Amino acid sequence: MTNFEWGSKFHVVPYGMLYLMSALFLGTAVIYQPEIAIAAVVLIILLGVSISKPELISYFVLLTTAISINFLYGGSLFGMEILSLYKLAILMLLVPCILVNGLRFKLSHPLWAMAVLLFITFAFSIWMPQMTASIAVKAFIGLSLPFVFLLINWKKEVAERQIRIICLLPIVSVLAGVLLQAAHLHSLLDVEFTGAIRIQGANIPAHLAMLAFMGVAIPFIEIKRSPQHIRYFYTVLGLNFFILIGTGTRGPILALALMLLYYFYDILRQYLKGKTYYMVPLMGSFLLVIVAVYMQLDNIKKRSFERSTETGVDLSGRAEAWEYFLNKASDSPWTGKGLGAVTVANDGTLYKGFVVPHNEYIRFYFDGGLFGSILLMLSLLAVFLLVYRALAPPVKAYYLLFIAAFLIYSFSDNTLSTVQFIIPFCWYLNCLYRSSQSTDSPQKEVIR
Image 1 (cartoon, rainbow, N blue to C red):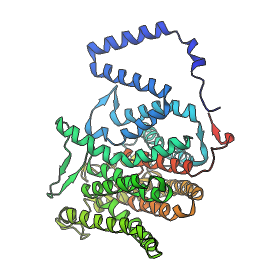
Image 2 (image 1 turned 90 degrees about the horizontal axis):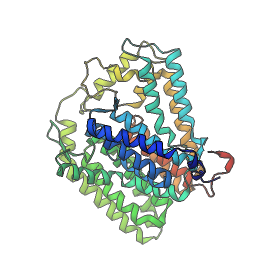
Image 3 (image 1 turned 90 degrees about the vertical axis):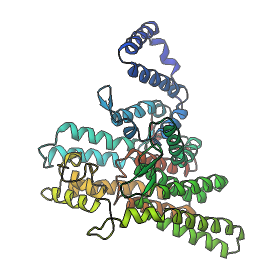
Image 4 (image 1 turned 45 degrees about the vertical axis):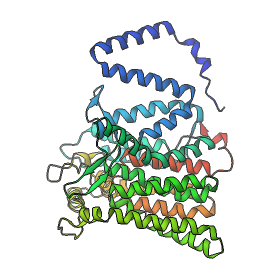
């Protein structure tokens, strides 16, 4: 079965009572809580679209990751933190997509690893006084949700379209940032205390850099995998590269260095084989890198060398944070402090921005110890391997460099716990796996 029988269920709904209750709720909310009324109307409209056109709502959900909603609206709604409410809302909107397309559990390893981490938390972890069961459960839900996007059995043509949308996210964020600045709601640029000027779009610079990382790395793969869309991917690659450089975020730039070097090697090799038309992307790419580096050289100097530090290079407080969290975790190295414990570990010694250590290896070592962190990494490697096996040989080198870049990036930022990275990342892995298969998934692999 490929479609959920929505129509067969409609006759059991008492529509008169439903409409009356909805009208009473919205009428009361307009008087006492107008923001709740607006949110409810928007949610009802989106749910209606998700039922009638589930693939359209998937595009909308993807586009919402271009905006860091928790930095634009810092309060709560319906008694919930805005980021938690956002995650719950996108899951609700995607339920019809799951009902129509079904789930494929071949890439479910990280979800099972997170479940084991939760078990370790309650059975073996040494809790700090500030740690509570609600923190652990909340962390489990928040960290596990993005891995659900590895499971949805998208149709191949929908998956291909979603890949192109993921590449647009940095551009969408910048355009949204322009509109927000025009409305005096959010600044397009961020000026640091060092004097460095960083583009942030509808995010903070670090989050826009995460989107741009994906927007640069994915086109390298797709140019090789989908030559019929080569102009599109070259265009978004160039724009996203400028956005990435403009954020002034060093981690993703360094992480992508190997992929960029291999790309130059690859097209130079093709040119030397007599394919002279490769001279255009070769020279264009080389010129793009030179211009981008020249434009951001001053910012990089300000962010890296303006302050004298023990490490010689200014790591924006990361070295101190890593040492702090490692010392805190030293009395429970095997099973950690419990899932989510890292979020309450900063006692004020560190800058308040270090709610987590900006290093995912240390973060999950702190929460789950060596057992938990190694298990999670192995589960991710299992997913990477399954996707690798599905790819055509010419694509595999770029894919491996993409995964290597992710692993390097995870040393300096919150790649597994930030919406702007982990949702597009998991979504792309699923779409790449789905698009690389020659036929639709066998029925026995899909649960509806």
